[in-house]
Length: 367
Ligand code: IPM
Ligand code: MG
Image (cartoon, rainbow, N blue to C red; front, side, top):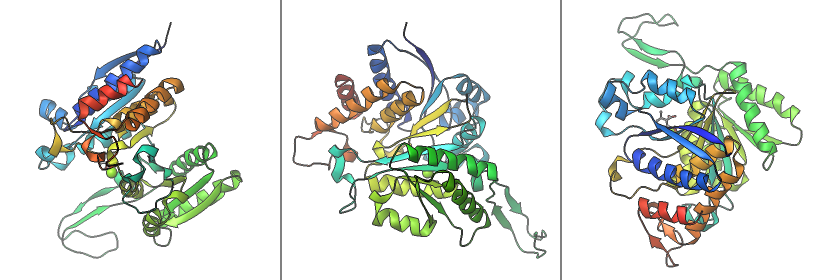
């Protein structure tokens, strides 16, 4: 008998339902060929949940997600919910899932398929193949925050008008566990780790730098460098092919991973994994958002979500199934199929400009 996996699917908002449906179709087709059973359960989160329950992340979604083997998510958010109270914004669903499932490690690969090598806006990017390992449940996203009302006393003793604040704080444990993931990942790759911080200004960054320096001694084979985040933003453009594993805090990772998506040229192509403590399901999602401008037009590129499903199956130990899906995506690109976000790649060759449904069908045909 083949294996069986329970996958929680959170379609979310905007193009989320279209791209998760595509990914599940591909996953089911690939799994059936391997005698593996995939049982899906759809859960609500984000604007979708706000519309039904008045809150972005119902307890039922957290409980069912926890009870699954892995979670596949489309995207959340959109202009419809821009004016809701900050505490019930769709984005709270993502943050709540990360915290609720203890997903402290966000793995964001920036890879360019050979077939899309002119996708990067950079002139001579070289071979782009690096991974951002972003801390995901600490730092300024989850630190103390609030506002002082006018006339309140500030911690430094001064009295001012209204003040709003967010704080960045990291414990040694939080830093070490994410560093460990980065060094272990580098050992399986090109053996290079770049720490990105702001140690010339921030106390918390100085702790990152000292802990990373110490850990690098345990990995003598790994080349280790540290960059200030402003410089890193520049070096990513200047020498993207020199990076292998980049490890950084929650906020810096958020910013640099969007930059990485652009460097790789196709935000519609990049998958991600958020992993937690042992025994907890991981969450897999495309790095792009809900693209409200193209909802329901059969235009969305489902490949990032399909590749996220492949990452999911690899994490579950199904390497072959995962490789089947990735190879089918490659074949589809080699066959000239392009959604509108990537049609400019290899222009003039045998390019077929297609929609979400047709490219999904092509991937399934190529399995
Ligand atoms: C991301 C997104 C989220 C983040 C938002 C939607 C809360 O930008 O996953 O990169 O800031 O982490
Ligand atoms: Mg982001």
